Structure formats: structure tokens, C-alpha cells
Length: 477
Ligand SMILES: Cc1ncc(COP(=O)(O)O)c(C=O)c1O
Image (cartoon, helix red, strand yellow):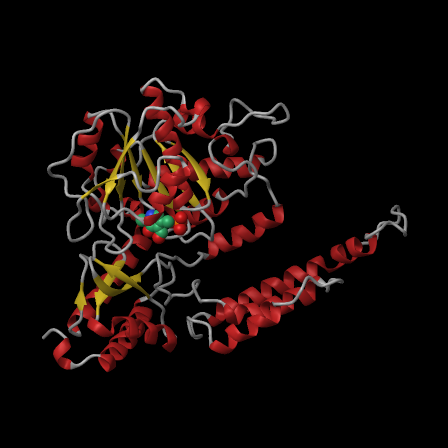
């Protein structure tokens, strides 16, 4: 590999030659280690052991004066890092709303990392640009959103909401005669924000980022599943953004879109939907009814890294009128070779330089097809229903209507102890929550690889641990 034309004394030349020489072996070693790691997921404890966590202290040393070989670095990463992971890529991780990377996404990501494409502009990556555009179009199609909707890949649903809300803010203020894009919010007419009392915490974060305030929103009351109650809705006056939800993070239930969107649009308000995972119900003919009417909104935020099972970090901002998204996100400089005729990711998203997140989304959608995607949604929802039925049969209180992939179960006063014991036992992993004033365990079935056998094994473990922590009287007959 050595280049005879480089002078032997060039500083760092040896290390460049060494890097090139080792590259093939290193990649083969990484692939083998990754393969071994993924092979352990079916049998290892989902939570890392205390010993594995203690070993992390070995990484706590000052920046070394002299480096190691990349092979030695990889060996250390695998030896210390792999055991200290939470097995989120495995089939029995039911924490948060977290999928496990689909093999099509993982393999595509490896290749795309080797490509090392900056997807800001077409000129930098024709292939990244094409796959980004195709992936956005396929997502819009799969979710049943209007033709012509504009979209951009961002880091997650939080940033997807922030991006769409920037477009919403600029649009409603333009309608009110104020150029927020140029002049910001100082001196602007007040923008009214209305959302449900059960909006996800990241909605207020997104509102803060776009200058609409974390605490200014008027909160509409919700029912026992966290859906906005579409009665006695307030009058809307002036520039207004209404934020609705597809898939409550606890119950999985969605707001009644037709009534709420009709009310908001009648007053000229912009409607944004936070559908981080719940929007994907629209991809299943059997579950579409839970989000009926969501396509009438003006913007949507969703994730690829939850139910679609691509790797982190992948959120998707979608705006009905692509011109609104472009107006909020565009940036110009003489050196930016912008093709007016192509869709440039950096002019549609808050990022300039960006990895081509669309590649993994494209790969999973290409691998699953419309039917495979619907099956993924249905299979995980069916698993959630099986969890709910099994917990109910054992006498525990399932607190939500299991419409989608979420189950919230209250084990009584010992709930926190039971959640901790389930996590420590290691068969599966689920987290705690507080749902309408009750402490509960929350299970989210989002991984492509979860099979009925994983659900039965996890259910048996949870029930047995919960029974050991509760008396017969505490359980329902
Ligand atoms: C309804 C909802 N909105 C927003 C988010 C935030 O998503 P992200 O972590 O991708 O920013 C979540 C995460 O669980 C969610 O469930």
C-alpha cells in the first residue's frame, strides 16, 4: 500500500500507510465482532450486568499521549463496550418506544458509512440525494399523506417537530403580515399555541426552540386515554398553531383528528401532528382507523428510529406545502452549489452537513414493501395485545386501551419494585411511568424481531415476578 512518491519523512505518513494497510482486516474484524454481538441478543440478559458496568471505569483515563492501533481500539471497544450495552437491538427490549435496527438498515448503514457522503447538497452526493428523496416519497405514500408534501430527515421526532413548527410559525405570522423569517419574533404579533394536556414532553421543548415558549401553550383537556376531548373547544383568534398527537407515549391512542382539524382550520390555524410512532398506524389497513383524518393536518413529525426500525438518529419532518418548509430552512452562500431543479436536503432541514439518513429508510421500506410494513405494525400490535391479555388474566390492571403497540400496567404499591426486579432479572426490559396519577410499567413492542415466543417468555417472567411481590388480595379476581 505504500506510495513510493511520498517523501519518507512526511509527518504522519507512516500512520497513514498503516491505516490503509490495516483497513481491510479492521473492517472484517468489526463485521465479525458485530455478528457475534448480534448472535448473543437472543440469550443474554437484556440489561447489562453490574460487572459489565463496573468495567466501564477502565475507559476513564486521560487522553493518551500516543495512540494504539485501530485493531487494538476495536478490541477494547468490543471487550468493554459490548457487555455494557442494553440489548435494545434484541427481541425482548420493551423500553421507551425503541425498535431494533432491521438487518436491511444495518447493512445499508455500513455500506453508506463507507461511502461517507455529506448529503447537504446534490453536488456532494447524487446517490444520497436520490435515496433521500425516494425515501421521503415512500414514507409519504406509506403514511397516506398528501401528494406533494415536503419532507426532511432530522435527528428525531423532537427536531422534526421543531422543524415543522418553525415552518408553522413563519406561515401563520406571514398571514398576519409579519415576516418572522427575516425579523424573528421580537415585536411580532403573538402566536397562540393550543395543544392537548397529554402532549409529549418534547413538544414543549420544540416550542421553546422555535421561540414559541415551553409554557405558553393553552392545554386542552384529554380523556382517560390521553386523547383531546373534541367538545367545548375554545375560540381561535389571530395567528394560531394547534398541535395534535398520533400515538400517546403511554397509551398509544391518538387524538380525534377529523373534528379537531376541522375546528382549527375553520379559524385559519395551522395544525401540526406529533406522530413519532403512532403515525405508522396509517401503514396498516387494520390499524389505519386509529389515525383516520390525520392526513388533513398541515405538518407532521415522525421517527424512522422507532417503529420503522432504522438506526439512530432518524426523525422525519413533513410539511404539506413544501414551500413552507423550504422558506423556514433555506440558507444561501455563494459557494453553495445549489441545483434549483433538485430537492436539496440542506434547504429543507435545520442541518447543513448531514449523513444521508434516507438510505436506511429506503433500505427498510425496499426490504419490507407495503405489505411487510403493515405486517410489522400489525405483528407488534398483536404482541402488545397478548401482553395485555396475559397481564389481565393474571389479575393485574392494564390501564390503557391497547390500540397500538403500548401496554401500561399497574401492579399496585409494589410497581416500582417489580419494574426494577424485571429489569434486574434480565429476560426482558420495560420501564416505569406514571399514567393518569398511577405508577405503572410501560411495555412498548416496537422491534421487528420480536416473536410470540419472546412475548410468552417475557410475560411469564413479568407475571411470576409481579406475583412474588403482590398478595393474592391485591390482584383482581
Ligand atoms: C409521541 C412522541 N413524541 C416525540 C417523541 C420524541 O422522539 P425523539 O426521541 O425521536 O426525539 C417521542 C419519543 O418517545 C414520542 O413518543
